[in-house]
Amino acid sequence: MQPPPKPWKRAIFSSIAAVESALGRRESHSPAELLQIRNFLVLQYDSPLGSVVHATPFYEALKTAIPDAHVTVAASSMAASVLQHNPFVDHCVLTAQPFQSFLPAFRDVRQLVGTMPAGPRCIVTTIGNQRTRVAALGFGAGGGTRAGYTLAPDLYRIPLVFRPERGQIEGNLDILRALGHGIPFYEPRVFFTNLEAEYADQVLTPAVGDRRPLVAFVTQNSGGQRNQWPQDRFKQVIAKLSAECGATPLFLGTAADEKAIESLRSALPGRGISLAGKTTVPQLAAMLAQCDLVVSLDTGTFHVARAVGLPGLVIAPAWQSPREWLPVDHPRYRVLRGPSIATVPDTYCIEEVSVQQVTDAAMHLLSLFPADEFQRSSRVQRSLRR
Image (cartoon, rainbow, N blue to C red):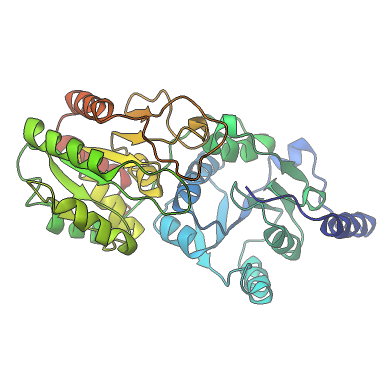
């Protein structure tokens, strides 16, 4: 989360809001009028993959509640890669990034507003976009009801405060609830096209041509947080699943992870397949849809696996509440972590989760969700954008 704005910034935002109100330019819709809004501009400039994936339920819920809504997204490169095939988004545009080039981003957003249909609009910021520059972009977009998460609540008609214990998905859905819509829970979803599905077929068909399980492993994290699990433990889990279940491992990660993954693979009896640094987000989603299980650290790739409905387990750090990010108490998933800790040692590693725990959880999930061509196909069809 971003730190609160400095007092001088807060004073500026308060003054801007006062001037806006005095000039009669501040939207002040009644509850009934909020329900009539049909134009939505979402400013989604977050860069973590998991954060963007956790915002996808917002779009499906919005289009389900308001089928005739027009949804435009001003996006970061990560948001654009996740949302490019999303059928619940009408117009997703990669703009200049406000944190590097604010004025070009300002011009891009103003131009984007000009392409939207006439009528009242809502300018939305999901969790992960609580940045003062994003709030300034929302203000610069012109008239509209500003709603969502922000460090500049004076500029918003409906400012929300995120509560981690509710989880990121519920938090994003709360934006629509604050606008008056009765919204149930939605799972995240990431979509791909036939092009990505065919690419996954070409790569994975040799591995999934029989009933042996194809298990995706995410053994490296982004490096930004302390949530690693010892690599020798991953080796033991992979070797046991290969020996006892006939599982084929599929290694996923970024190009920066490739060296570590190759080191791990070199010690395995069956090297499996490595796609580290070789997939776009839609390709990653298509690959995961054709797997049978994911065993992962708490990373963006795990969230993509969840978004295509792939069963799995996540090895989670003890210093973070799992309810903010992870599918706790979900029948398709197991969240493995130790007792909660208040502070994170500099040398922290997830030593408190054992090989036996991970192996037992993985084998139990494979007994509940065995390798099944029909289930793979169903996941692909559910996420396929035609």
